[in-house]
Image (cartoon, rainbow, N blue to C red):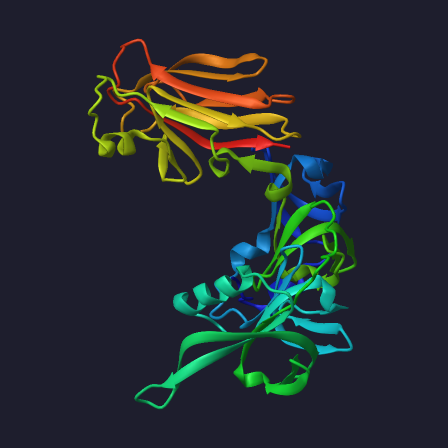
Length: 406
């Protein structure tokens, strides 16, 4: 994702790492990172020391990331842990069931292969990537070794055409060969032929609660249950119990959103209805498709573009069944800029305990910042209907960054 423009820039970080903090409520802070733990993060701002509760954070990004340029190439070797973490690596070997992983961001991880889901050694195009994903999703009763079938081009360079895989038992692995047992026979397969390996875990290790997702400069992604700063290094433990010590200047982002919020667009509605302005039994399906709710499209609201949220037309009703632990529902609401001169809708949001919000939304008014308590709500209904003009002209309502906090 990023690479260093100047080594001298990185020499100034460490304990004095400056970060940009965004909270779930949208507040922005800038300060020096003092400490971090599963419970909170402490930063030194111009106004003094601030203790930020982990459960109220959205993201924390080091300021130096803005000084970095995109990486030309991501390391080919990727290691997937059983907790969903993805590690970019420059080296991977196994001896007696213990893997040694040399991380692209620096540092070495040593862990049992029982905590590793797969290792992929080569870069993949779209066709090969799909075959690889199909192998990962397939049923199996043993370890899997995957090899790449190739053909020669006119320039006599090998071209990947397909993946083949075999089920058996994986053993030690060096930089030259992978020891693999199949039907009682043991073979050392040349590492250059191996696309990757997939480990079989009949009883996978339990994962602990997620605190945040840590992103590295080489696009590693750690699902973290515990973390702390010691001098110029970040010590972390993944949700599967894998320990890592990473140079602090290799952190691209502390992403708290997977642990702290759920976007409305990521939930499947329990029911979804839309009624045309003039009801007809022969309303073409294309019309219904055009006016159905749309998610994660570019939405314009008062000159700002939002990529996450829902776009709804009048006479739409959505009902969601919510899981436990949701606390608040937040969204920036308004008529899309492209229709705001005509748009005029009535919006009602209700839960099993009654109406949470209702009111008219006009194209000429400022965006409405919703912040509704949903603690204990198990079923949430969103109704968008005609406004005071009793027509659907320009009735395109945006629920931008619609999300539930946990």
